[in-house]
Image 1 (tube, rainbow, N blue to C red):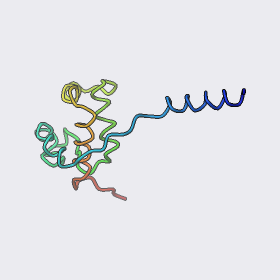
Image 2: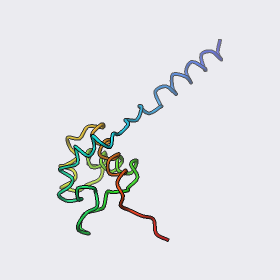
Image 3: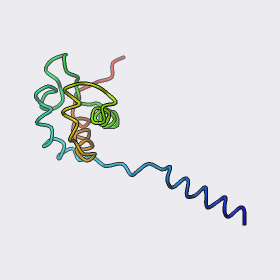
Length: 109
C-alpha cells in the first residue's frame, strides 16, 4: 500500500514538473511579422549597422529565449522591452524560425 502511495505521488509530482509543450515556429509567418524588426536589424536580420545585433543565422532557441526575456523584462533594453511586450509565444517562435533560417552569422576559427 505504501509503495502505491509513493508511486502515485512521484507520478503526480513529475507531471507538474514537466514543462509545457514548446511552440513550433513558422519561418513564413515570422517573415510577415518581421517588418517592425527590419528598421534596426535589416529585412533579413543582417543589421546594416554595428549598433544593432545581427539576427540572421542565430540559433532559434537563443532568439526565443532572448525575446521572452525582453518581454518579461528580465533582460532590460528600453527599445526591445517595448517591442517584445505584446508578442505572443507563437509570434516569438515564428520570428525566431525566420531569423534562424536566414544566412548571416558564420562560425570563424
